Image (spheres, rainbow, N blue to C red):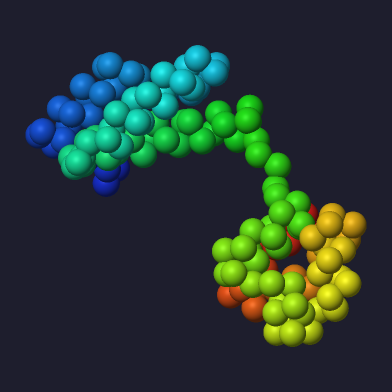
Length: 143
């Protein structure tokens, strides 16, 4: 049974898409060697100045397959609270004393988080999210 979808490629876009599929079929990534080969194809496409619609469609699909494999086989653990706070402070050029002054989080608490001795608390997450203008989910990954 065939179904009609709104997705469609015509002309040159269809040709470029099918050419890419013939050269490197879109299939679940099964090994690290297959992952490396897929990444080479992605790199070649990203190096092009412009992609036609067929190439963009193929790149999106292959990127999804790579992401699914990496999520299953090479998951990256969330950053520690200390690493996250250190990164945010460095990115904004903020010192501990400024952070304390602007958020009213105790200096000792900030030091304990940065040394890895203390995790974020919910009130701390809210204060830091407001201060750094980020979503609370960024800081709540380890809760």
